[in-house]
Amino acid sequence: MKKLFTALAVSLAGFTGTATIAGSYPDRPVMMMVSYGAGGATDFQARIVTMTAGNDDALGMPIAIINKPGAGGRVGWNWFATEADKDGYTLAAYNIPHFIAQSIKGGVDFSTDSFEPIANWGADPAVFIVGKDSAFNSMADVVAFAKENPGKLTFSGAGLFVGHHIAALQIEKAAGVKMAYIPTKGGGSAAMKSVIAGDVLGGVNNLSDAYRAAQAGSIKILGVADLERNVFLPDVPTMMEQGLDVDNASVNFRGVMVPKGTPQNIIDKLAIIMPEMFKHKKVAGKMKQGGSPMYIMTRDEVIAMWAARQATLEELLKGL
Image (cartoon, rainbow, N blue to C red; front, top):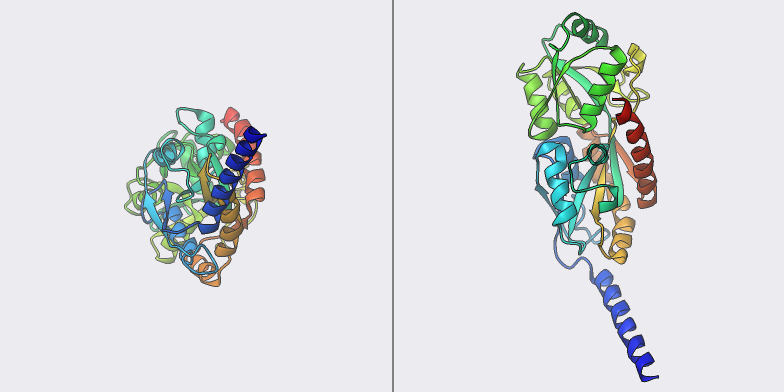
């Protein structure tokens, strides 16, 4: 009987300790890792969606963004899967299809099993862009040049097996052409700069980055890799409208995750707070102003989305 009471006391102590962690969490500022450089779409949006974290009706503590760019996100996500603390004070931004496609291709230390999703804040389609003075004015122009000059149409993107690269592979397959995809270091902002500077003939980038550049008159946007036109670019046709069989597999879903092994009660608390935090009118206003499409999803919805994208990408990458 004494052993039974001892075991029960230990069990209750553990339960109480866990509950206390959740009850007092967070009691200091939280860090969120972004696997891309400062100024890119993920970094830009992460800073907006966490701007109200310190409010009493949110976490009550600020969230600080740190950047760990490199290899299309691999550097940051490898670190997050293998070295990040599992105490709820180290969060990360995820990009889908990026980290799923990279884990399917191999050579990384992570997969969907390495992380626990919290909530999704946005869905950012890939777009094909060219410099403001480019002779290309439609995807038909791009395809015609690529057919006449195999392998000579250079275009940039944020890395290998990220949404940009997947859209690029789909465009090549749909058009029956071979182009020269050039992954750049530094994420979407670096890829954008290479188009603006004329270092490449075109590029695949995020709609949100491209929207701001187009508003500034630096580029032209020729097509959207999605199933329908985007509210931010109502005059830009989809790839499908232009005769290219390119679906929404490259749409960049962005959200927040924690490392596997983070206490469940902290995961549950974050999963309640974060979607509501993303709905704040200041967040929505800033996102709209920056041309960043929002798409808020709960933890359960993200879990289902990750599973669906895993199946889609496994099939898609076999054919590409």
